[in-house]
Length: 455
Image (cartoon, helix red, strand yellow):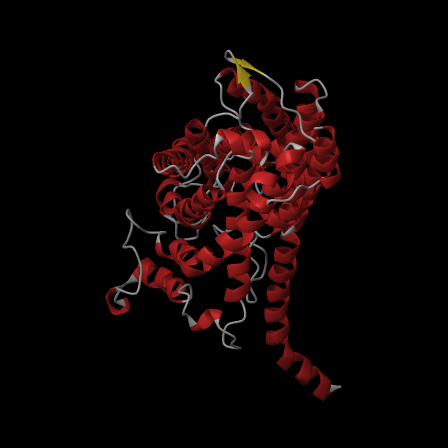
């Protein structure tokens, strides 16, 4: 018995490490359900003539952002947290001997984020950096996919891929470095709190999409004499199933917002504060439920806006999900989801063709979700020596994230692509359908043959 006890104690460090490694591996793989959901969601919303092109564009978001995130996105996250307010921009040029204090601590993570780093190679010396990279890469893919749905049926593939790289491997990553990082200066200087990435993922991507949509323009026939005309999804059932898969994936997305390390005595947020999976289980479920009800009532039972309300509800409370009481979650999630269809109607009045409602669902509710902790979690101190959560800090981070790192680059990069003729497909391609014109194949060939026979 004594020998077995000794062997058990000897294995304990490995078991603690493996548990943390397995936690992120399993939740990260299950987060891929978000992308399964995006495929079905966007494919169903598109018209049948654009079905395959829409799904292919979303599918290719995964490898394009994944590869670029490996080469520079992961480095951006670890290099920018102090820059330009509390410390330098880290890179291969940095002399570690010249660093002291927080800068020296933060620099240790940068070394492991270079694509040539030994921490990312097959090694027993570091069994966690690889799974952390996977989780962050999936966050990046999700962020870029939010843009994908807004621009379907008229954007050029190449132009979209460039925008996805800018958004998924740089813009949101800078926001995360500043606002979703233990060393990020939004938190250390302003008391910023955004547990579930309301701003750093959703606010940035939704407002980036708005900038792109202004330059991209609406689909042909979406507005006639300034009046919106309905362009209905070709398969609303597929869209509803896709969104429900996104809901499931988001439970794991939010589980990966939890920090679980071998030597920890409990789970923490990225900011070092305590959190439990029980809190997430209750608050995410209630936010989803209240959001669905809010979307249902506000849209008068429109199926698409009802199910979008579930996502809007979660995003509305994402910033303070770890701190809010469940009763408060119900109220806030309902309010955010109720507001979302009104914002969809406003977008139509402004002549903006956002096919999946990315701006209202992610951009607007993401900004609301970033501001709300400054009201309902004000005064909470995350770490000794840091400012408490406060309204001004939340407003500042929300503006920088959603506007300066979201809308502005989205508008400028898409404007450049437009000037180069790389943003939008030709009217001929758009009217005949991207499946046949770009891919040379139809998702429903029997319909194509029938139409040809009638002609």
